Image 1 (cartoon, helix red, strand yellow):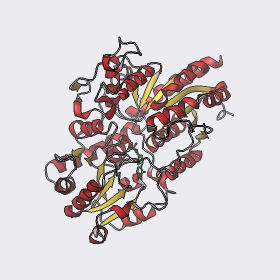
Image 2: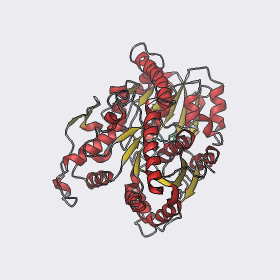
Image 3: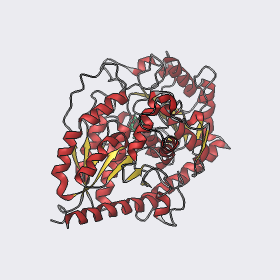
Image 4: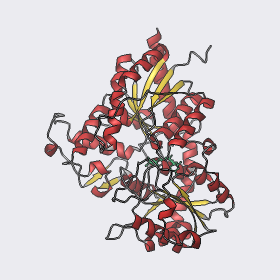
Length: 488
Ligand code: UDP
C-alpha cells in the first residue's frame, strides 16, 4: 500500500529523558506532517533512573502516532571501571552498539531515506554513508551551543587530531555570535571553559566528527534564536555555519501535555487543580540536577519566605558537592526526608513537594502555574516558553549556564538567580526573585509579557507554514528525493 511505501527515517536517541523526549516528538511530526515513516531506536535503559518510567511511557505513546520503536540489544559494559564517568559509559555503549544498528539499517535499507542520530551518537554517522543515505545529527540544545562547539572546532582547525591537550586553543573571553548573543567565559558550558582539560579535547574531536553530517536538526526556533531572516530564504538561514553542515531550526519539539497521562503523578495535577489560576511557582532541576543539603535548605526557606504557592520536585541531595545525581533511586530513598524540619508542615496548603519526578509538561501547561524555577535544561526552557511561563534561571551543569545567559539576556524570558560569595543561592535572593517574577512591576512584568509573546511565536513556528514547519518540510523533501533516486 501507499502507507507501506513511505520513505523511512531511522532516528537514534541516546539515553536520557532530555534526548529521548524531543526526538520522539520529532519522529511523531515527521510521520504526521511530512509524509515519512519513522522508527525511533533507543538503547536499553540505564535502569533505575528516575525518568525510566516516563521514558517507557514516551515510547509506548508512539505506536498510536504511527512511529515504530526498537530497542537495541544490551551490550556488555562490565569491563569498564566502576567509577567511569557517565560520558565514557555512554560513548562506550554507543560505540559497542554499532554492529546492532548496522544490521537494523541493512534490514530497513530498501525504503531507508535517512539516518538521524542524537548528537552524542556522531559515531553512527559512518553507518549512513555505508548504507548510502543522508546522515543528520539531532541537536537537542540550541544554535548558541552549536555555535560554541563550531567555534572551538574552527579555532583548532589546523591542528591534527592528535595535538596534545596543552596545544589546543581555548575559547575567547567574550564570544560575540552573529545572532547577537554575547557569551562571557563564565557562560560557557562545563567542558568548554578550560582548554587544558581532557574534556575540551574530547569536545573538539566530537565537533570534528560533526562535519561528516549532512545537516543538523536543532531544537530551537526563529523567535527565540534569530538565525537570519527566515522569510528571505531558508537557505540563507541554514548556510551560515562555517565549518559545520547546515543547521535547521525545527523546534520547539515539546510533547503534547496529553502525552503524559500515564505517569503516576496525578497527585500533582489534583493539587494544581485546587490552586487559583496563575498562583503557583513550579520548581524543578530536570532529570538529573541535584542540590547540596545546605542549598536545599536555602531553597526551602526562600520559597517559604516568598509567601507564594509552589510545586517543588525534590531530588535526593548530593552529598559530595556534585550538581548531578544520575544514581538509581533506591526504594528506601526519600528525598522529602532531607527537607528542613517543619518545612512541610509550615507550608502545607500552599506548597506541595513531590519526590523525584513530576509530569512537567502538564504542570507547566496548567492554568495554576505562573513561573518556573529552572535549571535551564533546554527542554525545560522550551516547555516553559511553549506554555507562556517565565523562568527564574538557576543553571547547574553542562551547557545550562549558556542557556541561562541566552534566556535572560537575549530572549528576556528569565530572571537570573545569583549565588552569594559562598556559592549558594541565598534564601533572600530566592524569595525576592519569586516575588519579582510573580508580581514585580518592572523586570517581572517584562519577562511575563515576553513569555506570552513567545508562547504565540512557538505555536506559529510549528503550525503548517511556520518557520520550523517549513524547515522540516525542506529537509524531509531532500530525504524523499534521495530515497527516490536510490530506488531508480
Ligand atoms: N522532566 C519531567 N519531570 C521531571 C523532570 C524532568 O517530565 O520531574 C522532563 C522535562 O519535562 C524535560 C526532560 O525531562 O522534557 C528534561 O530535559 P531538560 O533538557 O530540561 O534537562 P536535563 O534533564 O536534560 O538536564
